Image (cartoon, rainbow, N blue to C red; front, side, top):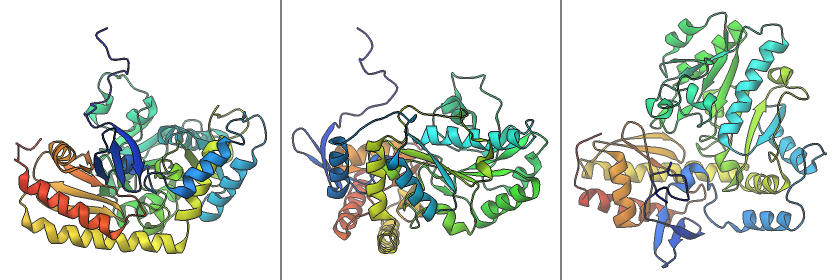
Length: 395
């Protein structure tokens, strides 16, 4: 056969981890890598966290899956916690971030249909966004690398420039249902929304009767130093998609909404075979046990300050680095060279795992329970990697 048994849609490297422990991954030969990618913000508690693994093991031995046609005390318990911790009144559980975004888009559109405005079906989204790889998700971005080969796409979104409030306002018309926005763009290059921009979207949504939908798949679950990034902007969305860190490595996602926003989500409008299964809820509950405390969040902010300070001290020593972006432990290093090449260099030669993003940014996503020794090791290895890096022409 010419094709791999695994459909060749990933540019897989030679590194093949078989075991994880805390902030480290190991291959079959026992070689160790410091993991500051965290599965792209998924492994919020690192690898093999005892509380999380025990919760999954106990639940697996009890009940893994039942149909959503039956009552679910496991879902209800996690939903009640999320409602208590956020702006939301109701939650729908999914298996991934893309599914959570899909549910969020449907929720926004269903609201207008249920309130007598079915013509309001388009959401305004923003340049360089990433909302998953469903047909709806790739329709919501202007990134050619995501859209190529799949057009024509659904006419459900109007893409305007990120952080351009005037452009967002000008795009509102009779068909507009709301805004879909990442408070900090992850794949797009760790580009944070400004206070003026996100607060302005909230005001525009209120003025025009629109839904403000936050995609916090990457920013959520303590990654930015608060449980969700919206808290740092002094506003609340109407609908929010979350995933990644909420399962700590187990596939879990959720769409959160206010009672008003969920007006159209009635019996038969949405569903999921596996969403909210008892095993996933055990994982989500265990993660929330740890991250949703003032002490843990304060520690994330403290470690973020120390990591940022160490990086700022190192950057002037290397022409490779330009600047630091981001919030909390969702940081980005802007390079003066190809970030993908540097990420591969760090992985293959220095046992250091990061992940690239747009605008030649290296994403720095350590476990949220990262230790000071890990920060020191990371900065030392990063500095050594930069010193040994032969700078190719920037992409």
